[in-house]
Length: 495
Image (cartoon, rainbow, N blue to C red; front, top):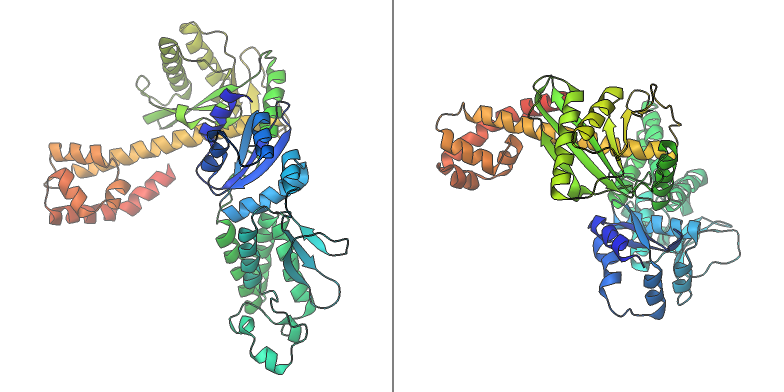
């Protein structure tokens, strides 16, 4: 067990839902699990001196590294966990599974009306099975939700008579469209079953995209009832799995990151393994309120505790290369002064000019051993200091995708800081125009709230307390700031 590597992995875990994958020293996945809180669940493996069973104790001794995929909801984690277990067949999932029967989802075809049920055994028949799943309670809730919202038959009656149908609560509540009595065609009903199969197969995004297109076509054809059904299904899926999918392009996949780092080392002819990459970007409007950012990635994962922001101090005109030069020099002069670890690779957003500027700054403080590369957005070309022309790379390669993610994260971080700084400046400028807000009160409000959005979130009592004004006056301040909110937001978005 690599204690230091595991410690770093635990620090990067978020307190949100997702799946985690435990690997042995050879990088092979030995266990896949899901969690409502990744940080809490995974940390629990290493906090207990004794585990509830011998197999879990064995698992912990084999763990060498951990990676994760964050999900919007626990239900999405459940579906993804099942898919990954089926794909990789981790040995400890199989060992632990031997102790008890894990649930499966059975899609029943054959004679009669197709149905969906949770079962404990997979039989040799023509039906479709999904799973196994590790959480039967959550699975039952998810299946019940899908049946209700896709209006799948849930009662036991195969061919109900008039009296039985008249008392069908599922039909009355709008949770079943009664295929058993011909309220919808068999073809329509089969299509709904297929929708759920796509969800259980982990293809929800593809399904939602298809539903959106179909819904628009139905609406144009004035088939409003069918379009409304699809609209409701999309809403239900967003409710169950979350409105937005978090990064599922395997940003946190150990396999992809590892292969990308190895490929990058080969391309750059770096003999040592690449573990730490630091990336720089700048953001400004014609040189005004210029800022810089640095993001740090460890083993392909964002190390957000070591992100850094820079307010550009020396450069007054719009000169990205000079700004890169300034923040690179400031960053690594401090690293040297504090005796901290240098990265294995430095990435700058830009081309030959930005790379040359970064190299000169490093040379000026006595650093020559850290390689520098630039990634230009236009053609995603790689710029190296010793080459006259950029290196054109396959955009689908792991190395390029890894560098793109890191570069884009540096850009996002710089833009975020720039917008916050501009918002703060606009806030200060507007406070100067409000009668009754003098220099002292202005400084207090700026120190406490910093921006228009932040002060709008505060209540009048809090503003009154920090600015030393009456509650009534605080209300007037908020009222005037609300008028600026739309204009401020528009200006920030435009730039």
